[in-house]
Amino acid sequence: MEQELFAYWLYTLRGIGAKKRYELQQIYGNAEQIYYGDKTKLKESPVFSERDKTLLGKPETVKEIKHKMQRMEQRGIRFCSQESEAFPKKLRYIPDPPYALFYRGMLPDTDRPTIAIVGGRNTGYESREIAAGFGRQLAENGIAVVSGLARGIDISAQKGALDIPGGKTYGVLGTGVDICYPREHIEQYMLMQRRGAVISEYAPGSRGFRSNFARRNRIISGLSDGVLVIAAREGSGSLITAECALEQGKEVFIVPGNILDPSYAGGNQLLKSGAAVVTDIQDILDGLGAFWDINYSAQKKKNEVMLETAEKIVYAILGFDGIHISEIVAQTGLSVPQTMEVLASLEQKKLVNMVGQHYYALKI
Image (cartoon, one colour):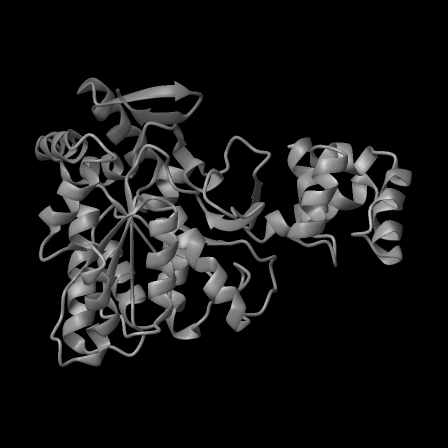
């Protein structure tokens, strides 16, 4: 916690962006070492202005930083930096990873496969239905859906995942996590916090500048094992996500479309470059075999057949990392007694283990 306190201080320093933060890390090391380090060393660097040197030389007290962080957490917002073990492993090694994330909900389970679904905003009914269908089928197979909460394909896919009990989806925002944009998606924005998370590299209160939405695309692909593109025009922002995925060594899947329909022109162009054609869910499951043991979904589905409805809901949200019972209650909507009863039943069936006080995980 103390380590994250200093990372939070460093990340929210006004005027200290990625370049200056990198320079500080080269001079001092981690955020705590930057906070306590001898600031006369900054004189040797041409990167910092006099204002920067004053900010860094007379930092807020630890008590003041702690108070600011606590006020943020009281609003349900969490902070996680690269210096924390909780930082998503899939993001840690991408080119230009974010130094930190703000989020409401729970960060993606490292032991659960994820697929990003992206596409155009102004798309027809058929394209939106395709996106919703893939969102539902991925959730049914225990695969989380990542997208940007935008109009059109993004929100259709995320609604599809949320239609499935226990389905998980993560919304990566171009604003602060306390801002729902567009506002019409407030229902999904709230539900996502219980069934996944809303995530942003931008501090709470940050407005959605155009450049923010382009930069967040590398996080959408970075959190995912592959990117599915549906109905993307030439020049569409979703093609930036696909390019990021290729740069990160991720699989790119394309739903092909009518060559006379301009809303599919960008995706069809990617097919010429060697992206994988997707016409049904099995194409994605086969593609994920390169990253995951295909038996993951098959075994989970086989186990679910034996379970009652409430057990299926709880089982679907568990991963190999422990989840606290309070979080299970929040995500499932079950009462505490119901949840305890279900977990006891799953333990009896040797599907779940208690891995700490009130923490539960799938049995390996």
